Length: 189
Image (tube, rainbow, N blue to C red; front, side, top):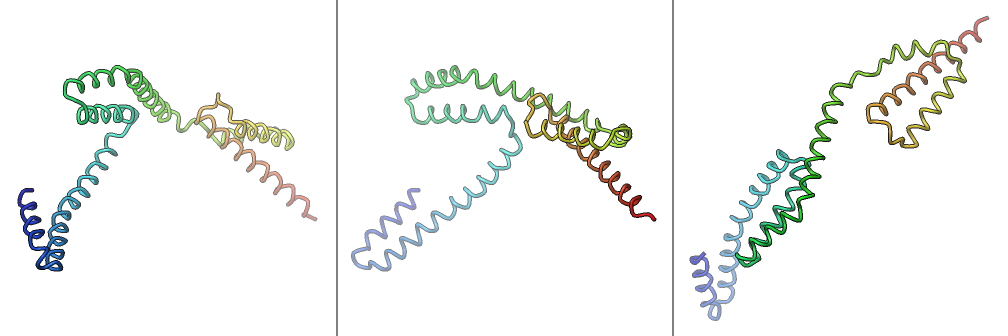
């Protein structure tokens, strides 16, 4: 850094006698001095982004701002005061960590339950159970399923919601098949 200041001093010392050459030399010096930090900053930000994607999760999302506040307090405050500020920040954010741990456990439970329940709906068996029902009864069931899905029933889990959508599709396919069969029988002589 001292070498850079030395060259800037030399350039500024000659600015009265040769202003254009001095300004060109100064801009070249500043440009060269700034390319290295920008190149390093780009690589550092790319590495930081990759690291964030690797460790991202509910716990880190809650813990990150707290650590940022602690680092900021250490940089800006007097060293003796910074320790007290750090204790205050961690004491005040105690509930944040508890909420993050709860969110992490809930996400883990959802992933486990979703992995075990992927194939819970059997479309062929459901279609076979629809055979004895009349068309108006099937339309009523479709309306009931649609109303439950549109109403945003909070008791439905995501898996149950997907099953209801699939039930509605099977009912619609059954109704289309019956309609096509009636249309073919009406056209026969």
